Length: 152
Ligand SMILES: [Zn+2]
Ligand SMILES: [Zn+2]
Image (cartoon, rainbow, N blue to C red; front, side, top):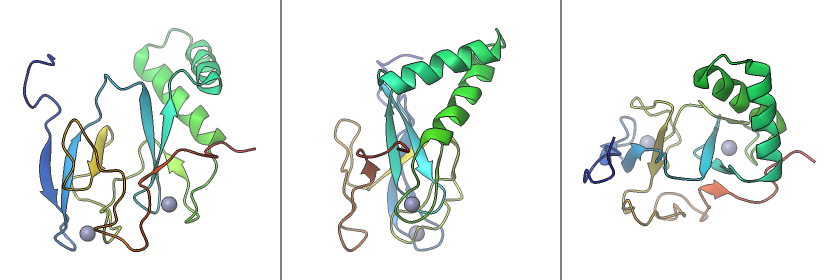
């Protein structure tokens, strides 16, 4: 994979099959130092920073538990350890690595959904994502929860 490719994240605009809302759709960049965990019931997500002390600890634990089982095994373990530590979403859902992606307007599960893809408002570009979805939902909500993401 090369970053010289203009569209290496397969960035495109998709449409929700339920309500017709246009949405920006692309692979989560491996260049990011964070991983998203998506709510199981709404389009919200939490950002897990790879250099967060707790995250580093969980990652180490996951690698130990996977006992040389390879990248797939420890990353799966790592995601489930993180999920156990995350506080619930305001909507009552919980944050999961492979929760289905949802439409930002009608909240229905996107037919195109697959783990590793991110959904953003349609006016986003690769360089600058629009973090609110005020055009799609009232009152204005931030798509990304950054505070109090961990269980006490
Ligand atoms: Zn929709
Ligand atoms: Zn939620």
